[in-house]
Image 1 (cartoon, rainbow, N blue to C red):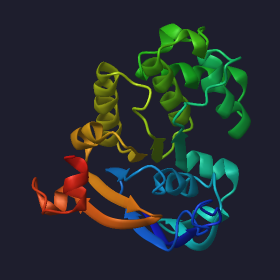
Image 2: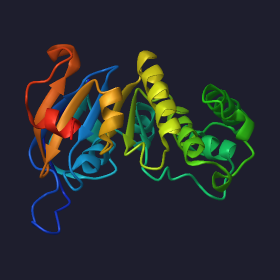
Image 3: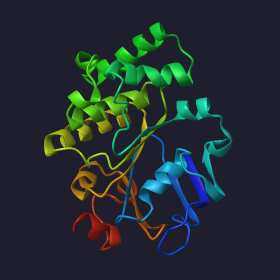
Length: 240
């Protein structure tokens, strides 16, 4: 479980002059799918980036069980957390296989032979091994996303973070993604995602945090509350 306690981001909102995140506390439960929802600029992506230590915080703590994520070295953190960016961030000059090998070589210091074997195993899980020699520009949006997820999971993280995962997907690939994320969750991966795609969130929702002005304004958990919502901001947001 990730316990986020009273964190404040070091980056300020250019309009208000206040921190993008301010005094946020929440918990990310293991082997669950947690969705961060809210309007653009509410702080969803910033919270994901703070969890992944891609953005600094000025106050508070982020704990993974007894481990302080702020104190971990990069290789150890990379083995705990995988991050899939909104635009995938695949290396355009590398093939699909090379994209998945690169973090294994750089972070885990594996030999090319061992990294290649591991990368092919992960690509095969996502039905992308046939595209191992292709470059990102030769793939569809859905295929690029599967490669980005495979690359993130190649290191064996316990937690997968995804920023706006459906922004470049058509309805068919969105449904494929939903199935894939549920399979990963059932396999023991904890998933946290930020999304404005409410149709997608409705289909995948498990635990939901509604963010507004850099704060968590409301929380909902389907296991605790059953299949119905009270009339609330989350209900209105998901059914708008």
